[in-house]
Amino acid sequence: MDVLSYNYDRKQIKSGILHIGVGNFHRAHEEFFTNKLLEYPDQQHWGIHGAMLLPTDEHLYRSLCKQDKEYTLTVCGRNGQGEVYRIGSLVALDWSIENPETVLAAIADKDIRIITLTITEGGYNIEKATGEFILNDEGIRHDLQNPHTPKTAFGYVAEGLRRRKSAGNGAVTILSCDNLQHNGDTARKSFMSFVRAQDAELAVWMEKNVTFPNSMVDRITPATRPDDVVRLNAMNGTNDDAPVYCEDFIQWVIEDKFIAGRPAWERVGVEFTNDVTAYENMKLSLLNASHTLLSYPSFLAGYRKVDDAMHDERIVRFVRTFMDTDITPYVPAPNNTDLDLYKQTLIERFGNRSVSDQIARLCFDGISKFPVYIMPNLIKMIQDDADLTRVAYLIAAYRHYLKYKTDDKGSSFEITEPWMTQEDMKLIESNEPTDFLSFSAFRSTDLKAADAFVGLYLMMVDAIKHNGAMTVLERIL
Image (cartoon, rainbow, N blue to C red; front, side):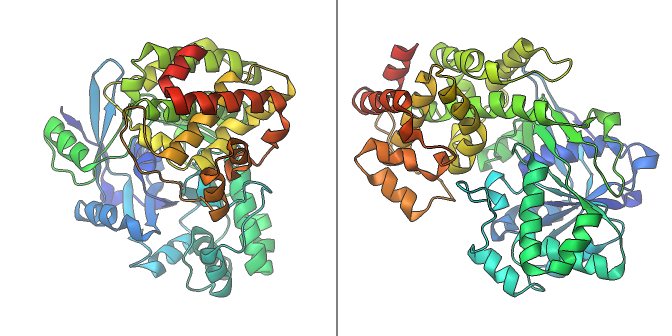
């Protein structure tokens, strides 16, 4: 495929945004929108300065630096057709392990007026049960005691803002781009909790000089594996060490609360609103919850690609029934949104053969996903005495996935739960299935007290163990 290059002179672009967490989603979403916007001459002060904070970022950092921060983005159409873009909006990049001072200097720089974040759902360091910021985390303790040599995103932002305040470099907006309901409110709670514990004077300054807009982001973006790099380069006639590929659907809705100015992203398709709640609820409750719903049963059935699973009519029926019966009653559609069309589009997006997302990516870090995507509506369903069959099956499948690490076909696999505690491990190891209902992912309510749910869940646990996940799913259908 021909590569569509940007139409601006990168040498003329100035950084106005610092982004923390330069991963695939950011490069397929915010960078994509900004790459288009920079073609407007009056918007060329909104280039992006990337900041990577993790030791594991080194390979991507080196690859991007070797390419002068440029990379290709392959947008995969649901019709099998695609487009390839050369992205140039990432005009500066630092890796804190190698260049901590340049990251701090960028946060303090008066030209940087927005700090955006993709640090994952779990990266905000919020205790699932209490909703409070975890101050006794090892990295947080280090940063509280060593404010000038930070390790975490919270420590870097605090020290950078301290320098910004001292230099009189003005206000700044912190914009979360992570999949969290009210992600701006969560970011505000996390950063302000940290700063209040570290520097009360800075916290007072931030109250007046930092805003935290809420936003809703959407674009399915798989991890790029080594074989994907080879495939994309061969398909596109490129030699890119850091390519990204994604679906053709994209959406970004942002609360218009920018204290120091913002890009005119609305020119390239971003929606600005006074309240993102309805958009957030629709996306998290339908897209993200459905991803979680299909992930563990599909993985246990032996599927490894989302599109393969979504070409199994049983799984399609399961997901669509969940959307229509379990979730739609709790999702008021935003203005001008056709909810039936939105749900049908989701089914098509999940089944996009050109994207072929990994189910393992959806299974990753369930401890952070269940509290955000599943539990809020499950609590309402229990209160309303609704049909709990499909969600009970999901949680039983999740337990089986974590406990036995073997699918219906006898293939073993590794699990990845970065926030799992020793207590969680004991609950998984227990042979009493109800113990798992105290798992940290579910602590926003007492599932053991919901008799109707417990009865269904125990039945599902036993049936999956003896008959396999797909046999049980067929009975549900």
